[in-house]
Length: 532
Image (cartoon, rainbow, N blue to C red; front, side, top):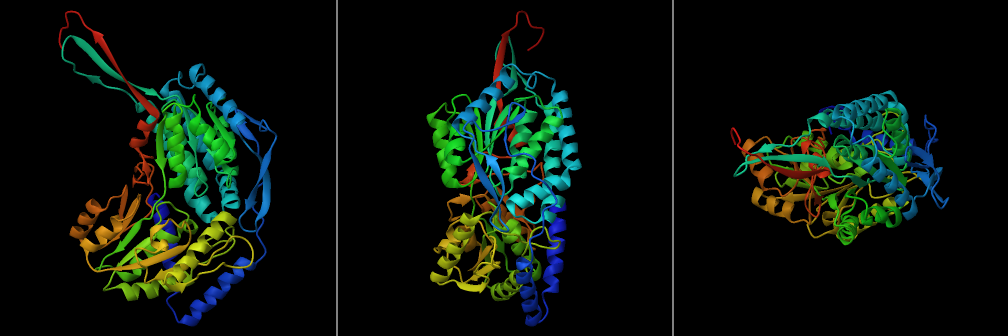
């Protein structure tokens, strides 16, 4: 994320790492205390759930069917709240509101400067409600509160400020033509955008999609992930407090096969953006093509290589590789989940990576100093444990972890495998959990070929002190982002997206504006022009 995120998280992680370099007895004591922390009484979240209905046409309303579904606390598996379950009819209601707001409402017709002022006010409100938003995000998702409050919610405000700044700088061009014609291009809003966000970074993914869509003058129907519906509803209220006209943003909580499919296939939605798994991304693309051939952007899965070269400072490489994989409970599409380490430093790296994982602080995410909370739900929890069993059965060496952490909730021990081979499932599939796989390589030709031998191409990390090595790898790796001696740097200005089956298009930065604009060429005949 932004440099603030990297510096704050890495500095804290580095301190933890250095503290863990004592005798094995100290690491064991730390591991025991970590287990105890997960078994302590659950901390009561410092926030109350205010909104559980759908947000349609500027108002919170029940679903058309009256159905609700439970959203769960991943720390315990207990119900936080019953949330309105949006379905096809609710998506239709949302689209009607969004279409009216686009075709007849003030949003695309007000000056771009007026739109920018509303988005700036919204960013101010996010900052004002920072702790409340962060607590709700942690409660519903399980990520550490310090991460939510100090990194993600501030980044939410930053992204909206970035796109607020773009609102009055979107314009077409005057271009020369052959003959007596005045030729100009208009950059017009695309219309009604359908947006489907994931559960791992609910608010950040909301900002990556809503920010450019609103800056360009579009209206939106947004579906939240069924695992994490709460924070978006609170943020939606703040949008309207900032002055957003009714119908411009409509939020539907519900399930993929019903509400999500209705958005992807809706004949009156002009564009759809989806973040999630590659398998579901294929379905979204198919539904979009079979309906009205709406424009599609997809940010999908990854199995990102993190390459530690032979000249690496091993201590620093271990810490960065640990961050690259374990951040957000390993629930990152771009996680450095294939750790390639040069054979010269491999053994030392494995031992230190093992020690770092053992010393990772796991427990209630509302507790200060916790690095890792629970996985988001039981399905993800069981999926990760299944992959861990696959790793053991396929012959990889289990260096650390390998089981659940504690006796309640969806906590998993930080897990490290060495002696991993490319054909093992843990080296090929997106696990989406706290499981580090460490592979050995001999030279750059080999690691480039192996790193690229994946259906994914989202991101990569390179750790080296050699500029020539860095330059060679940054060009050779078939991925959308390459981080050199850093990882997960997600500034609002930096585009993000993947090659191959990791997606279509880019989000963030100037590039994302193109996702929400149509280009119209206007040609006017000129009589007796003074110049051409």
